[in-house]
Amino acid sequence: MTVMPMFPLGSTLLPGERLPLHVFEPRYQALVRDCLTATGGPLFGTVLIARGHEVGGGDVRNDIGTTVRIVSHVDIGDGRYALDCIGEERIRVRHWLGDDPYPRAEVEVWPVSPAGRVSDRQLQQLIEKITGLYVVLNRIREQREDPPPAPPSLLDVLERPGDHLYAIASWVPMGAADRYAVLAAALADERYQAFADAIDNAREIAEFRLSERQ
Image: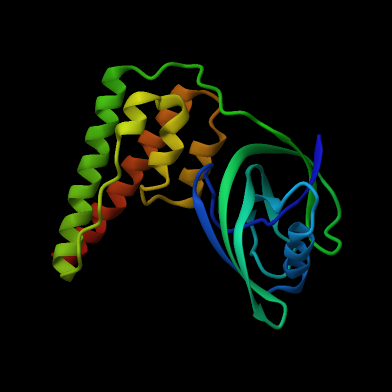
């Protein structure tokens, strides 16, 4: 069990995903200063806020999150920081400590298990779902005369699906709750199903927006 500084957010960060942060709230300015001088490296944890807001405190937090490493930082004055971060390991919060001056929690690493093999047929279905979603997104962009979004590479998923679904999921536009379901799934096949459901939800939203513009 490790005591870790925590930065709850209104979005879900997946392992391997980049995270830019503009830190302006005094309590999180203190968190950054402490992280930058920590002997264990510039690390903190993040979880999705279940209810409430990022600013001001009083939020209700989920208990599955991600460790975050500060890759680079810029002091932009008045105690504020611009951070470039990356998600590393999945964690489970066992106990929240006091928010003095910033949130802290007792956490343990929850390794991503490859158990629960994803079949080749399921992979093909996943590829078809992602392709279908980007077809709809391209049609929306064409109506706006914007450049079409680049579809993600699926090579990693084809090679090691249990470990690389996070990498592909980070490219797919989905709601915070759907992303959290992908993060919190215990086994590879459960992550696959949560991801497939999230793609379906994203496509339904995209198709609704497309129908409104026609």
